[in-house]
Image (cartoon, rainbow, N blue to C red):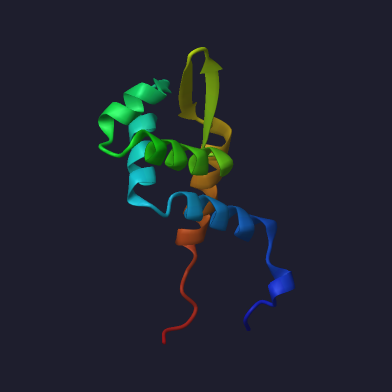
Length: 106
């Protein structure tokens, strides 16, 4: 039986938030880049990705709003890194979600 709209669990909303933030190939690439770094300044990120600064900034904002990354201002620069606590939450939520068995075949 399908869930009613009111029956959506907090974990379902969290998975959707993370999935939306990762729903663009550039954001996935930024996450992969940041996962390989201890921390990274905006200028370094911008040099790796061929997008306009405003576009990279918008992608970083989406990832930050979802809680997957965090930024720290070190005047005049902003340093970004993975939010380790939320990354572990995302890993567990997606892992459990994709580990679910299919109950029926259509």
